[in-house]
Image (cartoon, rainbow over all chains, first blue to last red; front, side, top):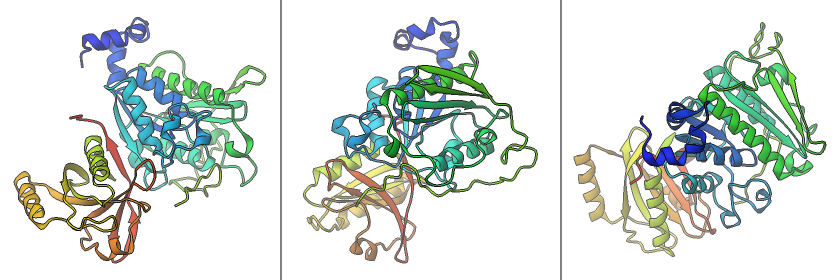
Length: 269
Length: 136
């Protein structure tokens, strides 16, 4: 793949970076990234990845744009209310960068479909809003040997971590989903839009760094952000020997569907 | 998982919108689980609550498919004022167990598309995805 003149101009501000260059830009253009959840985290992630010229973007979401989404899910507009989120997101991506190939999956990930969906991609972003999906994505990426970025947000706080095959996984830190009702959802506890924007943007930057093999990834480290205190903390986590997924005495050998109980939004028909 | 190229998906939605207030119908063909051809058909029932394909057009489609060596994978039709799920009539008229049934609801401002397999009155939703590769 050789860059054409328009591409050289469009991406000039990042091509001049030592970490990118012409080769890196070509690599981005031939990369495939899957974003699971076109919501608060997925919105900025998709925007920046599309703008940066990641050649293929997959989007998974079964939801429809709702007026309560618009305060933080900036890839959707007021005129999109009622639209399938994947279609709304696809339309915005095509406006920013028509050369991006967009693949939309209007479905929820589950133990039956997730391995097939992620298999084709170089990097996965977890932009979901519930624990069952987060554990499912972690386990599926482990089984399929895929790198991914974890992200979670609530109120003014967020956390993110990057996984590459062999590094500390989500289960090394958080063994299993919290019991029902212990952790409130975004609709119960609230979320500041800028928090989602900041964290989704970090996930996009981790993705680009991974694709370029540039800098240091958030592997083996969990970044905590508290926007009320304006505080960023990085905590190191080594691989956990007792991890039920990747530890010495493995207990998990296949994907499982935990009961869906957080941020559930069943559309009325 | 059924793959619908985005251009074909858009054509299908536009055809359904253009036939309002009546139901629209058509055929999606391809190979394996990938759609590569769309045939927008005339609804000779001309009704907002049912559809019936034009047999002459169906014959032409059959000829064209033979020439292109493609198979019918799905039948699509719209629901102008009801949700995107099979109606009683849709279920009783689902004669082809190997085909998928795509239903596009236009009851709200935005279209909603769902894909189903209907076997012996048994309805199962089938996931699909769209792909913008090969824009035309």
